[in-house]
Length: 512
Image (cartoon, rainbow, N blue to C red; front, side, top):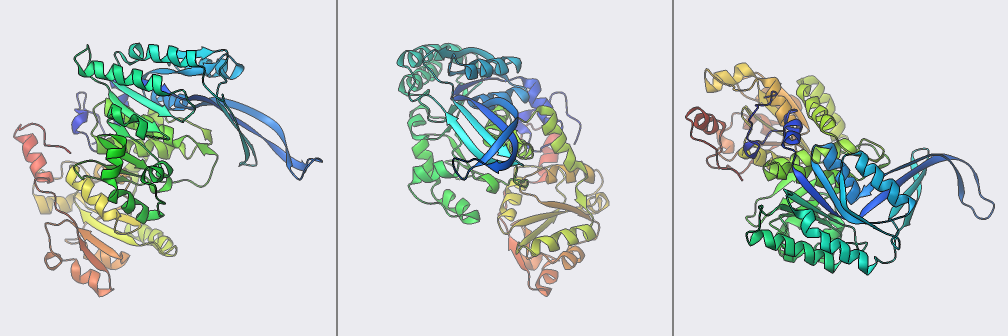
């Protein structure tokens, strides 16, 4: 569906419809960002000569821009997506500190707990570029954080946490989140656990070194590949093998971080979710051509925190966060993703179903790059957790996932009058918005065999309530040497069961 229900229960929402970012923003969650605020500088100019002192290019700077970076960029993204944001950290009284504070205030962010100290140097990262290429980055930061500034920040933490639905820790290792501040946050959260007013807020930790935060038992930690490798004391392989290696060490990562769930971010390979119950979820990035993009990780964790604090299920929150990150990687500099941009991005999937001829041409381009094509098909009428888990499994069988949807007439022939619940345009938009799905097409034949013969996917995948012998498509796959893969079947997860429960007024379907 593309129209937002006025009282939509976000805890049951799994599809990334265009109305969803606005509905989350309407919740106006109150989020505290605690951590290393920075100022990013982007200087650009032309290069026409080398300097006389050394064989180094001379950049004639023609444009200077400064934007909030680090934890401040996370705060800016949260505000742009509709959260009520407060920032706690330490900056200097220097020009960079004044500039940073003013930009945060202009964005509507509460800076009551953003402290300044005359002996503190505001961390800045200046990137110098020419012709779209970053030539140099200059980092300037304090060698140490004044003890009295740390004590003042620690003393303010309890008040900063009050009335917040989520606390986002952004630890870049500058020393601002040293032991005094970490202990103060632990005490504040423990106070909530002991029954002080207000429920314990969602705690999300994005840290270069997650281990010291383990005693706080975060709800989520979001290490990147490098940080994960350090925790595991090993070198991670590339590509799909990297994902598998991370999955094999899920227990170690959960124990090391003390977290209820770990989301490992893998840049172009998307993210992988690890939980104690063994349930994992993947997202796949839609990378852009190389640009001067920075801070996509900040955008990801901001959108993830906002969605979770608004009540969206974890797996749907991850897909939404991946979409937000995909938005900013197409923008130069340190950027933010707004509610309107995210809605437009999701709306763009509404007309993404390709006809078989165009899809065949696109798949040949992928094969020329030695990429394996996986195809699956179905009605996908009311999307549920069984669908998303199944599609994520299908994606892992190759490089490109194609989902072929039964046309509306085909669904009626299969399911009877009253189905589909959603028209094919809406079904295509919802399925295409999943990060694991690369292409969507529609077919109207009794089986997908004619489409399979035309597209010749290396792998044809179906849910585990079938066997290869039961499938009418198996002979078509075997004709050209393709492989039929039977995926896990998730019991009690079917569109018919969901529809019947809704019609019978049985309440919420159990979620993961």
